[in-house]
Length: 561
Image (tube, rainbow, N blue to C red):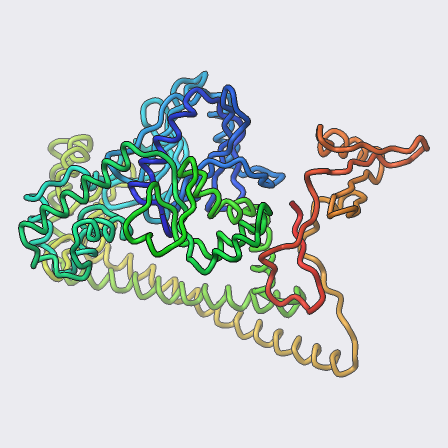
């Protein structure tokens, strides 16, 4: 695993997850848009987090990781369906980067499908395989991932562990790339494992795939079988570090934060077992691949909540350093310019469709007349059923008496989609698109006038700010958002520990009932109106390793953990 887990990595993770079958699912979290965390409670172990960074990695971790105080809708949905469910099975789809985790719940089996390719996705399915909710709605050419759709796996890729010499000959004969690229792209091998197979076979990675001899191909088959055997029989994981990080790792000692920094800076990849090309690097072995992944990326992933908060703040800073009337006007100007561009684009598109309908008069006239005749003879139900078999028709709507059809492209194949009213002539259908385009142009006239007014206000505001700066007048900057701790009395004590106190009777109740944990210390004075205080022993402030850009010199960057 470098940027993303390979099929080999996913297979090893699936094997490691099987040891947790029988665990109970606890809360689910969504600390960052790219990350989902599901807490598992094994029978004889401490709770463990299943960390899913979509499209990149999945592993188990027991790190302390702050979670957002307000769960997202997706995490609430996972809690509703999976809470206290028993983890009963895990499987890899074919040899692809897809894992399915099954949970036995009071409502039946619920499946969590984790797709690790492209941008990744996490989907919750019911016992029939229908999607309850995906993390992200996606529409591909042959499948749709959205609520209510039946989940379909993508077509399975080649399993490189089962390839023989004849199949490799076919793959190589169709390639115009070198050996390592051909293996990586056509044999479902990640670049790391493609390079390893070449090294095991003693063949140069940049040799053209079409120039391999029979003996060399047999060597590649042997190399693939070696990797398959190692994956099947060995356990553990290996973190590959650049050798220049050896000194820093020794200096870090047992300091976990220092180790995280070394691993993050000098880590190259994580693999289930060492490969020939790793001889020149520093290797650190772990009992599981999940442990190796956690050591390398766990420190970064554990800061997901803090990073999301920083990203939101950075977005506001990027829009404008000062949130005043001028910045609001400039945002309005950007929105207006986007709107007018949209009006022009829609007008041009509608006009083009009207012209295309006129240019394909005979095609459109035939579609309308044949559909009307079929409706008259067979009825709408029959027409709707038969239309699915006609490539020029997408759908029909009996209630509106409309037809969604395709115009022919330059090659005579179905191209742009249009909507035809069956009770209108070809000319009337074309005119409808021309009218729609004209309305968009009329909207753009008003938008142009609004843009001019906004520009005048911006210019006036800039003149006023220039005068204020020349006179030395200052403007207060309003903070966009307060931290949750600022609703209460708070202080930082000791080595960054957070001390939280109520401002009034209701605040005291909130501190005690919501924020006081078993491991915290409670303080209260026997005086009327005294605050109830909670000293958070596991929460507080620490130095932020990823501070926001643009902080003045001497200003510390802290994060709430």
